[in-house]
Image (cartoon, rainbow, N blue to C red; front, side, top):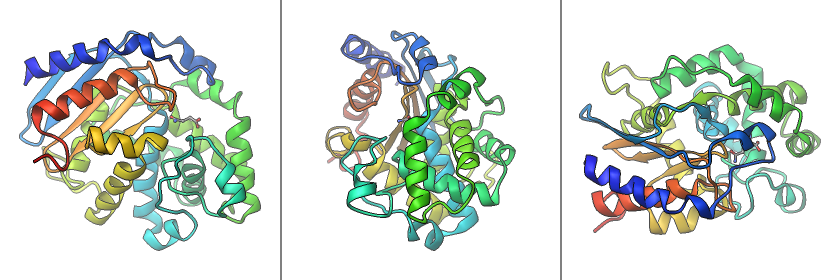
Length: 303
Ligand code: GLN
């Protein structure tokens, strides 16, 4: 396994030059483009890692998974999906075109409009401190904190998400205070994780919502099933279909460079690689995962 992981790292590194770090949130532009770390946690308790697995980076859109799980736990399926769809949008993660022109409901909870709507529900029922504790538990990482520099940087460059949030308010999707909702959304995006934290989250999801060591139930099994399905169909934004065909592992990306992957009933994989492709997905991370998928037989429909 370690050899395959090292080779996956090499395959990934070969792609780094083709991508760029995110710069629309200025603080993210400071990331070292050459970083790449991969971590695998298996259900049997094995831990494998290669490359930059200790580096902290902001979770960004991968927090949408944690927020959706909490919203489903607290508000239930009916309430969450009354105003948010379950379909891939085929548009960029921060697009508001379909929300304005085609549908009054965001297409799914993995794009910004859907996640901001989810955060609107959360603002009414939980505090940020509760969300932080929840994130620490699910990622099996008690050291997760807000990255303040990233938080302020995004708060100062929030016009697009603010436009989405007010559009959602105008359509009656957000009924709470829009600014508080945006603050919680950005706090969640600014959580500092490592590739290991993402492997931990992946393993909890792969394990049906149970802590792999203590056996404690962290999430309802139905919630886990819904979250994993939505990650598979929508987790890589407008790259989700092609990714499902060629890699075949439910994966959620973030513009901080993270990838959270769930190999159902087997393992969680966490990757950090801040060089991104045009759709905002880790370019080296994708190549490394493809290699792992092929060499470990992890494609969901592998023969
Ligand atoms: N905080 C980022 C944003 O809202 C998250 C986007 C992402 O990771 N794709 O724009």
